[in-house]
Length: 160
Ligand SMILES: Nc1ncnc2c1ncn2[C@@H]1O[C@H](CN(CC[C@H](N)C(=O)O)CC2CN(Cc3cccs3)C2)[C@@H](O)[C@H]1O
Image (cartoon, rainbow, N blue to C red; front, side, top):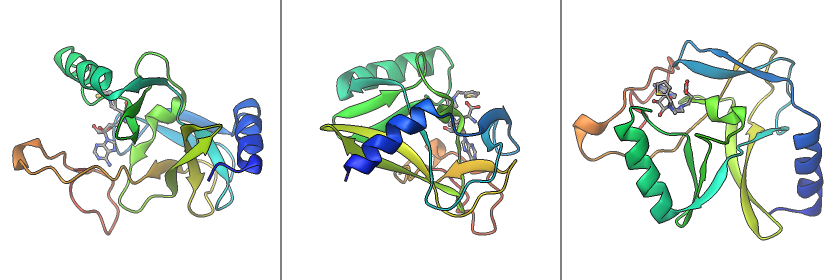
């Protein structure tokens, strides 16, 4: 994917700011909210940050954990590339996980590069918190599992 129209709308998107803002979240710390209603399937925002390779991502992950930055603003685009929004990142990094999400994160190839774009899964009303399914891998070690606070009726109980 990554058609001409997607490339165009991606550029328009980054120019014409989608009406979103970050604020305190009932799910976790900060979240991203729709300021205006958003129609299903609309492109909302790109997950922007530094593109880094796997080895660099592993090293930074360790450093962030050591510095107590908690889980990181790292988003995997493929087995070798990660987008790190920790230092230089867009506000999409504040989007929380939900087991019944109103958005989805799609990887689109634009000019040979994979980029992460958040789309609306359904019509979203103004002031709704934007969420997507993180699709984290199932953590084998129970101690390492993160309890999910999304509150959705179908909540799976854990992020990973
Ligand atoms: N449904 C959920 N249930 C429980 N926890 C959730 C959920 N959905 C997101 N989470 C947390 O949020 C992180 C994903 N974060 C999304 C934004 C976050 N809300 C923020 O304010 O920064 C980014 C990471 C980077 N970390 C920086 C920190 C700030 C404060 C403590 S750690 C958070 C995840 O790794 C989780 O720890």
